[in-house]
View 1 (cartoon, helix red, strand yellow):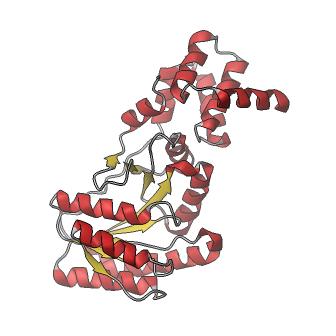
View 2: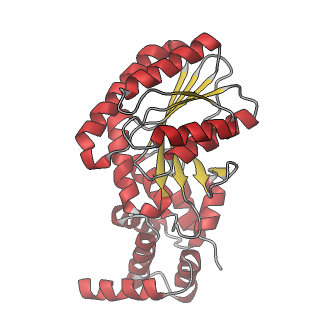
View 3: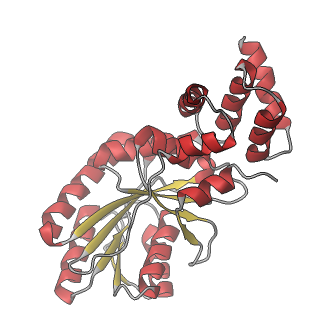
Length: 297
């Protein structure tokens, strides 16, 4: 049985058609039998759904009584939720940006800041809370100058919580409305990372008080596949994630990761990052996402 499934998956991977067209071909050319459902599981796994989510989706499709592309979209859409990151009308909005090194946190911070400033949401402050990674502060400083944000920083190796505390304090004193804080992403030392984020979370809640809005945003590289699911689990367990931004979402990303995270962890998505430009941050829309994921050629 396992040899049969392996050969089937290898055949799927050799196909030049995209996921959506191949799913359509499954339903169009064959009746909904066991082999069709097994092939669909393989396709969803290839599209970065992960084995657990793929099995759940296919099982639900079997029980629906009307297996097909539209029913598959309905099942997937039921678990997709969007997150609204609009800054508050009053008080301070604190956006704590989480993610592993290399996921695109710094660029995403710049894009968010650019978006808020462009929309007239008010002055934006960047807090250089990744004080451990070499050049992280310098990179954020360049982005701050580029988009017109104020930067709060300390020397490399400083306490990240102290940097973010200072950013909140200075923003409140100046009447600024938005703070976007960077954090470290050292997944190779998970215990230390979790402890650090828990400490920052306590500091933010204590300093921000009831008059502000606090959002924890997880940045995930769409090309990392099921590693992205593990990252989501780790960060959500540590501090509770309010929104996800999927970066590097272009032709090299298979896209199913967003549906898998939504289904398994019930996390909402805010944006898809599609490029390096400051305007390359697309609001996450479930219908558009599913149409793109399952589109035919």
